[in-house]
Length: 158
Image 1 (tube, one colour):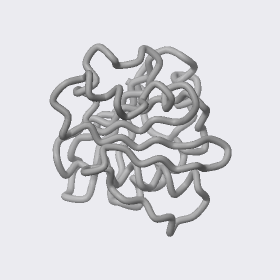
Image 2: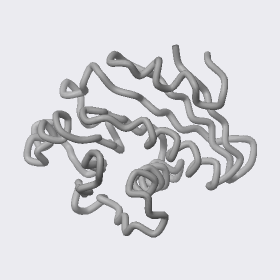
Image 3: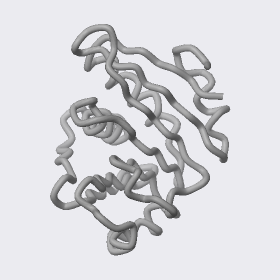
């Protein structure tokens, strides 16, 4: 069962990201869907900062490096931006299999994964909300224990 969470501003996005970071486990894969400017990178930054326990953690965008790895406790976070990839075979060069096994993988532009998309994952679809800063997050669990883990997040189930 999916869950819809509506936030009114950037602070709401940061709170939601922090709530999900509190649930982090090794092997988690979170796929970030949304058009340019919807806040995929902002969500990922807030997630990493929350897991690091440091609101000032340096979190550069992986737009040009394609991946940034954060050695955090209790689990490393791999932040992927696949926008510039044209072939899913290129993904293997990013050591994505290691990320899937040992850390949390935050993946922007996951459509580039194609057949490499893991079965166990949380898809997050971001849409515009009722004002320019508002966002609607649709959390769609697949496999693992995602449905149970997101059940207590604020927002409505759909």
